[in-house]
Length: 146
Image (cartoon, rainbow, N blue to C red):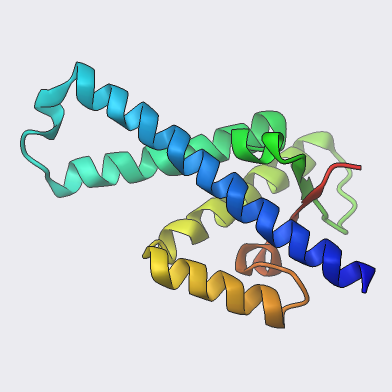
């Protein structure tokens, strides 16, 4: 029972952390719109791509530097690298972590359509023992700080 409560609180914390991050990014994009309205005069595929890359870069940089995004920090979550590989050098370990974080964030782009993303994550969390799609593919896990 305690494990189910932990999983449910983790899922809800991750959801609210993601919402806080999206709101924060929305505010930042709103500031860009306020100071550079000409950027949004004509919406092109390049500009959409730039906004998408900015969105992913936010998560990637925060998770590399702080092991959590702003939303995850507020909810006491941390991104753990759970590699079972024993690398002989620190450089190799760092590159493995960076590669896994890149894959984790790239998967967010692959299933970016919001209703499908949320639905896929919910189904995967239920049937994959509390692990998300990106956690199942990479050696990275999000959990509460101990």
